[in-house]
Length: 400
Image 1 (spheres, rainbow, N blue to C red):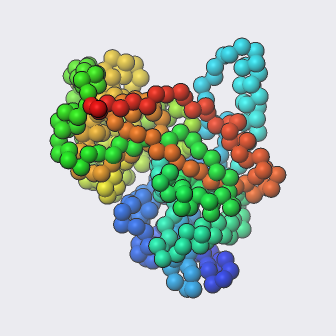
Image 2: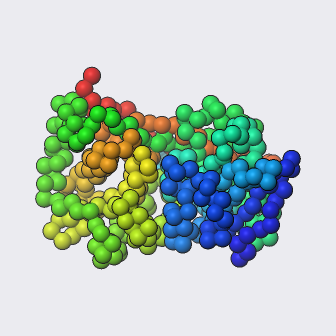
């Protein structure tokens, strides 16, 4: 595999350089990557590249304007198979419902193509690109659009025929500034919101949080803690993670395979390598009943944010010990102790996450298919195939 292409001209004194290995990306990347986001920095990207999700490849783009570095972007090349990535629970709603499910399944079976994803399929948030602030937003979008299109022929020469481009994802707070320019080139759509917990800067201990929640939710929290009283909760060092590696991965797969949409399957050594790369910033906390690991959660400290990363648990034990609810409370505790501004809880389980204080943040995706015909149908196709958003009630545990 060729790891670097020659510079690709984008016109008007702009260029993009394509790299396929982080080890050959020049140091200009480190100068451009924002210090406030470890997910765009070399250390994390190297771990992900060396221990990638199944069938995922990578590309790194460095943009230049007037021969000066102007921005960076990461891209993940993933084979999207609709009938494998989308795992919607079937509802038997009479003859028409069964016919509708059959048709959707048959359509999904036919949809399989390589997608160039500007962003990170393992995370929720804006982790795909960064441009020098002196560039105006329309210029940034034009550079990104032209650059992503410009590398496609080079990828084709390397045997990768990309059919679609996906920019994942833009937060609600930035949509007004960047969304209109992106819509000039891409179809816009949304999925489930990101659940984000903005922590009160005055909280110093978990008890400060407890004091703010209403009696109804405090009773619920105490009940969950009581059910989990026999659980030993233990941050696991590298040796403990290695000893429990098989069980950790088994429970991860159990949760991943139970989700409506599974965009990528982790490498079984991904957690171990994160721990080696970020001995203090990455944490895997195990839940044990005697010597049996029945659940765990992982977090990554991303500067002023705590990323609630992947987790796993035994579903039968969860019913007994309320493992998942305890995990949400313990991540909240970790965030307060770490003195971060917010906790990113990502998607899924929206209502229960809101019940501990997280609020929904809409995220916007931008997609384009290379076929003009397919691109015109893209919006309808996405709406047809994506899992239905569950009905849920936004909760708030705090005193009025």
